Image 1: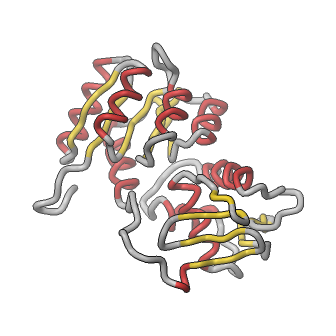
Image 2 (image 1 turned 180 degrees about the horizontal axis):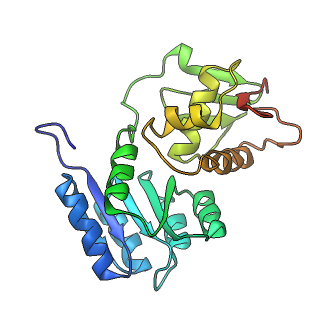
Length: 237
């Protein structure tokens, strides 16, 4: 719920099943969010651009443009949190959705209370960093990889790297304690929330996407090291 006097957070629900979208919207509205709906892929992209939502609940099976392409297009202009809805067992869709910028997923069938809780969880993560000059101690360097924790920016050499919010948050947590190996659960607690429930392998997908963007070969890692049986740790670059 929002604090008293704060503007309601904006949630865009995208599903071509209008009855389901209406039910989801009603639950989110009762939870204190300002909710709008879209029922086709093109409409979802247009409304996301016009309304600048904080969270998008996105079904993957959409007419006009499928949810994967919708997610890909939205990521070109928005850093909002995207929660994709997939049919149970559609692992490939989940992996592709996360690879093009979704932050989390929920498999159908799901309870509306579970969906509302998942939305509330992502909203506890700050969407944008406060406008402030980066402090010297927030500049972290690992070989060619440079991380500006305060400014939420990452470079490889002189080239900026475009990361999703979740990818950056994982890198931020790992680089803040570079000698510490963190388990999937520890990363979930730090990046998503201690109340998050789901498949912890979602961390592996985001780490794989992150490695591709910073040109880190998992067989000879420079920046993110896999600690077998434990989790992940920053490399020395």
